[in-house]
Amino acid sequence: MNGLAKRNRRTALLAAGAVVAMGGMAYAAVPLYQIFCQVTGLAGTPQVAAEVPDRIVERHITVRFDANTNKALPWRFEPAERAVTVRVGEAGLAHYEAENLAEATTTGRAVFNVTPLKAGRYFTKVACFCFEEQSLAAGEVARMPVSFFIDPEIMQDRNLDDVETITLSYSFLRAKPAKTVRVFGDDGPVETVN
Image (cartoon, rainbow, N blue to C red; front, side, top):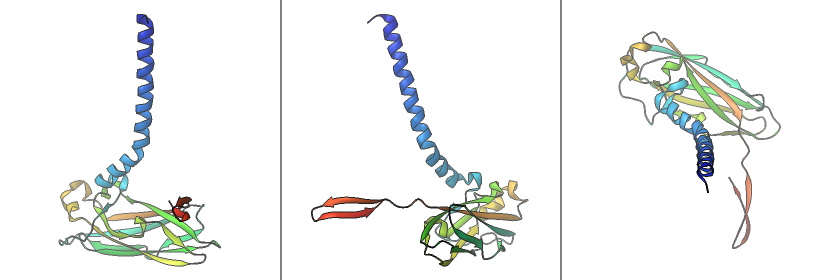
């Protein structure tokens, strides 16, 4: 093989390797971005905690609640309370209500964010219906709680001194149906759900 052919082959291999590497980075970008947003609160992503802090500060912040439903999900979805005012560090509890308007069971998944975006790293959920998919039978109405607090660390961030109101917004989307797979075991076919 002459020198030109070797260089062309090396260039082709490098180009193919670059394409594969870019494809891998594109595939990993969305989950990595979601993890990054959850850790940093970037893009208004709230934090998650197992319990409420033991420190309550006398600063009051109003939390407003917003609800949206994707057209593909035949649900009525709205906040039971439009707003609550809590002290920083105090446990807050709000409810949303969902009703399945379809004639069959449907499943939805909630996505959420907080505005102003800069408050996302201090708005912390303890329990939320948004952590799992929700299924409602035809005509079923469900009251869905969200337990939260505003992290007292917000007091150290001078960039948030102007925040008096935080909006927690949920959008319910239709969840993709689970796939049923037939697996053959020792005793014959068994159906499993993925």
